[in-house]
Image (cartoon, rainbow, N blue to C red; front, side):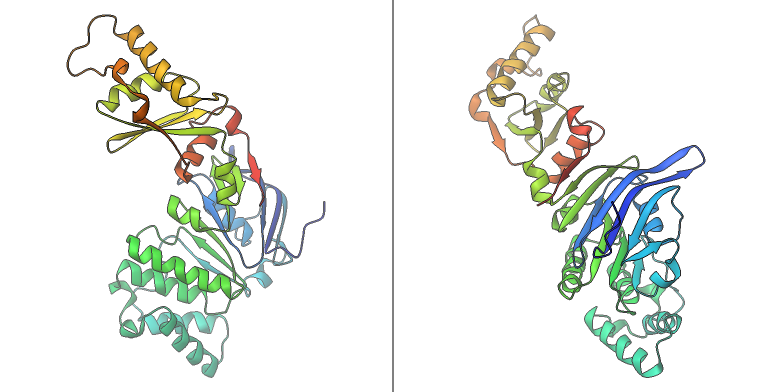
Length: 340
């Protein structure tokens, strides 16, 4: 099937090898124009390598890539005039001021003096950097550096923005403000590909891909992916939850059990039609098998677990991530593709 030039990004069957290491495998990625597309995954899973291939900085070992209708890496030089790229690590000149960094990037893009001044003033205002205009970039806070990095990435009014874990070193309020700015850009028609390991950020994206060990394990609309998840999520309220977690983790039908305060969040294969009675039965059976003698006061007594302590709850992206990556069920490790 030919690549679709109407998409912001269309990549088919892309691999990247570094010697014996397969860093990215069988990548298929389609990003609609004007959408925010998220890449969720742990460090080292292949997200940054993917971005470098899509921008033409790395040549894929195999596969085809079209970005803004251009063949990559063959037309990478022409593409760079039409995109913005913000790296994970602050990469601007720390011994230049905010305005000087913006001027430097404007000069790289060949903007004239009048256009540069207009654009720099506009970006300083948009990203709330007026008070820091003459401040050295190296003395800025994490959130201010983040805003300056985004401003520099936008100076050429890119059609497509690549953001590589841009909020990894900033506080929650600055992350929230940053995402509001991304939606402003998206509303004006800018396409955005952003990598992250924050679940709340992934939830904000129009479309999402979950990556692990170089493979996309699931992709689609975040809510649709949650609805298609092949697991029940049960929360158990009570005491001595560490013992209960140890018991339940031995069942193959339970890919994950994690404690959240005074609750245990348990994922159960949807092949179990009625998970709450099943969990009650298994908890009591396991305790009987493991502790035939009377329980001491600090041991968990599963026979005392009551149905009203268990509740079926809605899944979140952390549950989805677990279900399709390392600790997921065999059936859920197959790549899921949900389009809605």
